[in-house]
Amino acid sequence: MIYDIAIVGAGVCGGMIARELSRYDLRVCLLERANDVAMGASKANSGIIHGGFDPEPGTLKQKFNTEGRELLFDAARELSVPHIRNGSLVCAFTPEEEEQVRELYARGATNGIDNLHLISGEQARALESSLSQGVTLALHVPDAGIVCPYKLTIAAVGNAMDNGVELHRNFEVTGIEHSGGIFTLKSAAGESVSTKYLINCAGGHAGKVAAMAGDDSIEIIPRAGEYMLLDRSEGKTVGHTIFRAPSKEGKGILVSPTADGNLLLGPTAVRVDTPDSTQTTREGLAAVARSVKESVPNVDLSRVITSFTGVRASHAAGDFIVGQSKTVDNMINVAAIDSPGLTACVAIARYVTDILGGMGVQLDRKPDWCGKREDTEAFSKLTDEEKDAVIKQNPAYGRIICRCEEITEGEIRAALHINPPALDMDGVKRRTRSGMGRCQGGFCAPFVMKLIAEERQIELEEVTKNGGSSKMLTGRI
Image (cartoon, rainbow, N blue to C red):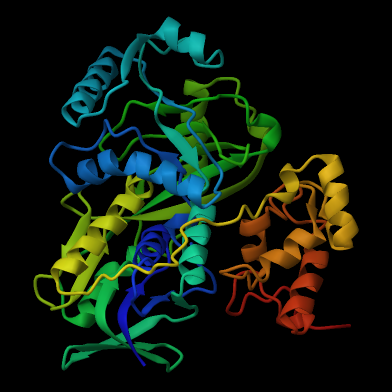
């Protein structure tokens, strides 16, 4: 079988492009090297829907941020993904930082962003009582927001699959041949996929994938950002997303609620050797703690329940790379999608679709396409009476598996079947929040393992944390 379009990389951009293309009568496949979608930067970022004031005017970042903010809010609603328009504050502590904040305000006006406000430190503290007394000026952006990035990616891919897109997991592209107008992509496992058009959304590995196809123009700079995640008890420490004035390394270390009710701190911005350098460091986490205490002194760091690192793909030019390859026919590169890539993902997907149309791809709309997705967290939002009615129909929803997050057996079993079905422990965790509470799976893990084994009809010893050799058990005694 020859696909019309193959997308390499099932992150948020690859997922949104797949969803956009699923509107049309096309044979589309999505190739992901990991055991699940959203396994790169899309599962380890700040989850911010940026206001649009920050990107340099005239750049692709500016174009897609300005266009993409409301498109992303719309997509999150359609896909039933947790999101909040909570607003943001960019805070200055010194005269030099005040000038930076004023420049951001002016840039926002140039970018066509309205509803921006320069406010005093006193006005900022009136909005956020926990804010440091050292804040002297702030840029208030009421229309900014937060979204769960990995749930957004899962939902986009799931909606694409519901509309006919095929997902190939554990397909690490190791070679690409291009002959007679057909790309043949080969995997590490010896599989191959043939396609007429190729879209490179491989994140930190986009340069390598482009080079395999014959395009050596992309050099990705991987930058690691370390985060701390606090318990839900701290989720209301701030309501807005609190930024520091930006530096040359990035937008700075933030303090933000998450769309799921936790409190997120970070990230740092350190160049690393590879996109897979996701280890946390003592120095990085200490830097996060110092900066956070300066912005919001009453953050309770004793409530940190986990820490993690995301590696974002950057480019020396400082802008996104989105467009037709200059050296390889019928290939589109979507690369160096660092911040505000999450905000831009829907706008990027539409732009790529327009490029394909210009390249000669026939875009005939499907009459039965559906862009909506049922809320996979609907059970947790029911009243007690409504839950009782569901439990009478399916007793599995009456058995709590994860006590921290109050996740039921019924919800976990469903996550193992809804597109894209979870295949491992971390997949269940991202879909249901089972294992995301204070004990981080310390109590529920054995029960989740049993459910995975039952639903997938595999042995317990075959259950993995995140695919590959990450087996939870080594054997029986």
